[in-house]
Image (tube, rainbow, N blue to C red; front, side, top):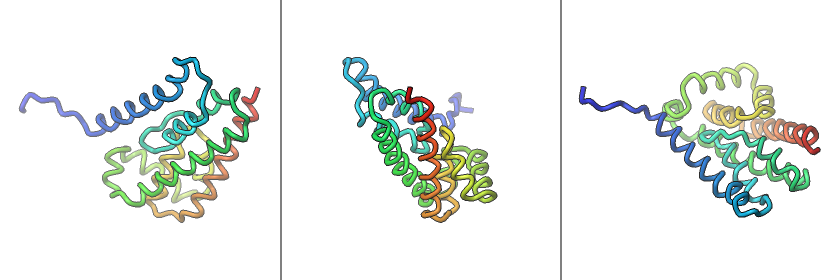
Length: 175
């Protein structure tokens, strides 16, 4: 023993992801709140996009609800769809291009294996359902890429799930 404490690589990954998430929030919504300005659709789009990247995993549905009083539903749904789909395509490509052991090192073997098993067993239904719930679809997009799941199917089913999710959130919270 050399007297040093071994810090797992996952710790650095979590620290990095946390710092990025905090910075995004601070430089967008936090800055707007502090300056007394109205909320900006660009801020929503940036936070929403980042939240759909597999390594940040932020509850972006709360941002959608937060911005509802400030923008028409069609603007928010459109922005949410464009940013979510773009980020999920990136997640899929990362899963397809990176070596599986690197991804497993970052995300955890159990989490990835669980997502892969669900996709293998239920296919499109898994992708659709996971797009309906917060925090889960980025990991499924990554796993679909790792499994080399048909990209067009992945994209169509993801879009359908996301549209349904944001329509339901809009109808419930438009208040």
